[in-house]
Length: 374
Ligand SMILES: Cc1ncc(COP(=O)(O)O)c(C=O)c1O
Image (cartoon, rainbow, N blue to C red; front, side, top):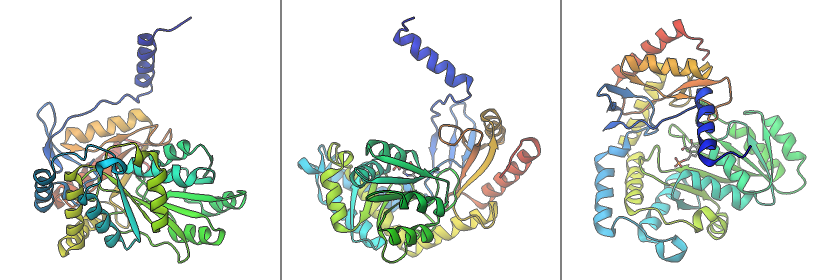
């Protein structure tokens, strides 16, 4: 029986709802981690990736405002047409200098930076990808229209077997900090393996706020980062050998066929890098590390998963926290594998110690009533 478009849409919505996978956008009024919900309730949010609170740092905010008055609000064109401006060059120079990389290029989002890397270097190569890599890596690999093989999470031996069985060029790609589990990729071992086999290593450092891993000497490595989390702005970047970055500028459709990033975001991110490199940046990271230590001693990153299992249980857990004024998102498939729905806590230097203590207490109470496994 032919189905009309409205019928098809209604059916899709019904199936998402019955699988407990329906999502609705929640508008939060406020700045930093303290918000008011639409119903007026005051909450402390542990949902944001503004790890150092730089999105509202006075120097970052005023740099963005100055950039808007000096350059206007948009670049209005692709960089390769007439969209390139000095503020893009300034940011790229800051990123490369800060990270000790030979070259950097900025894109409108981190998502697009991953598409750019995977399509430029993955085309015609075998892509070897960790099973828990971010959606933007998965989408980039699909767009590269090449052979993609997936290795078990963090399993270097499995990755090596896939690399060895490839006939030609190989690209190995991994999040360096996994966005939904907050664990670290085995970068030292992976990079040694890549160097041994002449494979290109691609690292996604989007969440590497507390440290960026160093690959083994002799590894050819291209890295992706974002301006949107630690740096409090919007945009993504790719760093690596100058020729690799230059090829990407010429090939990557997510760089070529889109408008260049805005003056405000470039200036904000440049100022945020300045803060990160200053003693204040060190203090903010130390404060964030202390928060992590308080909530889960020994955990390496500010992303702390509380794995629950079923979608409905994860949603119930999030609702219980909200009753005591704590906002932690329930993360469900397809963002995480089926059966691993969870609460994803993201800590920030912007949180107060009492807020982290209150969260720890509330999570402790949850563990008494729900099948919390981590
Ligand atoms: C691991 C990872 N890579 C890339 C991105 C995309 O970055 P952006 O938000 O700047 O598009 C994200 C999150 O959004 C991420 O978690």
